[in-house]
Image (cartoon, rainbow, N blue to C red):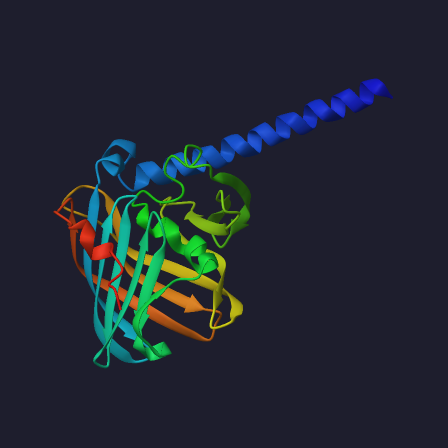
Length: 236
């Protein structure tokens, strides 16, 4: 009986090791596919200029990221400017479409769900050093599904294409407008930048199948100067 039990434990440990190794292999192939560890580690700032389509309404949008310090999104729709900012300390937003015409601090839960936006490398890059846990949970429509749990217990599912090893989709639960919904980001039109890394030039964000937003990158700049003050919350 004891011998059988020990055999079972050894098999279980071996299986767990294989799964962990497989997850690491997928992550490593993903990192290689988008430019490699050395190239990604060299990116200190990122700035994109895009065109956004929100339910048939188009407008310009910019994203500016100072690695691990700040993220600022500005989008203009129908003459109204929406701003969303995350830093390593907190977040704030201005959203006149939701009745917030002055800067408002983000609730702690919303901040925790999205603060990884300040990390240019993303949750999978050096994930163990960041305290993230990565598990391979299956395969769907030609993509490996990786469950990523961060130190704040926020769970995100990453879909890594088995052929290209690009990250084609992520999903997570989010609290919006007083309700919890699944938000998915679908990435496509992957291109190599002048810097040498690969970036998705098209993103579709789906909010619980209630509405969606598409964004197409027109211009991308890497390692240009960024003034940290743009992430400071203005005083009302």
